[in-house]
Image (cartoon, rainbow, N blue to C red; front, top):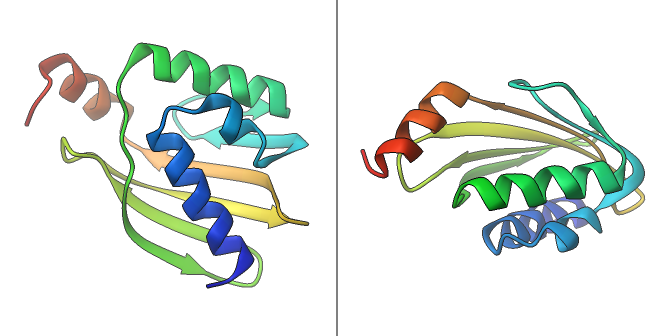
Length: 118
């Protein structure tokens, strides 16, 4: 397992623990987290605040379906217990996340969490 893959697996562990502070420590000070359903979030503190707000709004779980490691990036394919699927692309430099891009269906997420099942 590469160091970059270990960082992404640690990211999943901290995400599943709703650990916004622990997640923030995995990012460069000026990192960018860009989920396609929202504007890019820039900076470690802003990323920490984003995760804290999201964990306060919903219980989220990331189940790994696949991890693909390439020289410049790691791609995480995931699902949640309610069936939502997505992927995240992580660019890692010097052992920290420099850039993260996420693709998922926000409307499906909101509908599923409003119902609680399906």
